Image (cartoon, rainbow, N blue to C red; front, side, top):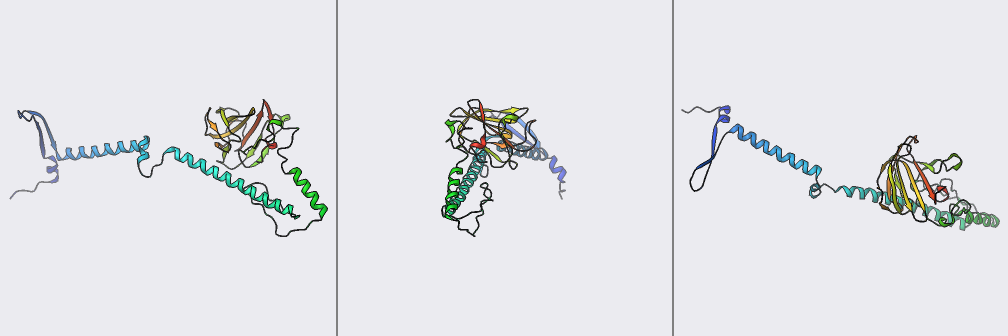
Length: 285
């Protein structure tokens, strides 16, 4: 009766693989293998194939053809479209609030605009309307007409060539430090939440996108009519020198970079023909 071989003896069984020439049957190559060597080489081959596939998926564009993997530019486009949509919704809310307030004013009603500051805070208009006298209504309408566009009619402090230019707010937030030439503060500081997107105020070309010790990650955009806008203390710059941008395009992320920064904010400057101008005369932040 034949004895059963142990598992160890089975692994030690050797096999001969002979490669012969077809016509002469001359032996060209002989390979001796046992089960252990065959299993080891198969597992090594599978490991190598899996490693190569992982590297291809992680570091080459071929991963875009695998279901579930999106190309890198798609994420950037989604972020851009999301920020653009938020900006449009915010602008639409402001227009709706202003239209409702103007309708009440034209009807001679008083409105509570104490909560009307920006698109992120809805205007709370009371339901209790107070009917004003004819003189009060006329005076109120006169004041509203004078102040309706006060950010664009300060001709003594604004260049006449850009009075009617429509600027896009680079960010919505709280102004922590205003424009003051006497203190050599040639822009305004706007505080906003962390990771807030910074947007181009006008169409133009990026002429500066780099790091400086004092202002950190800084970007400058050249616009028409000899206008240049500066965006300082960012955490990330999303545009490079020479790139064209449109008003409202996301160009950077708010940050706290540079030795002159003490917290997350945007330092925004507007220059016209080499002269600093007050951004608050043109933009509602």
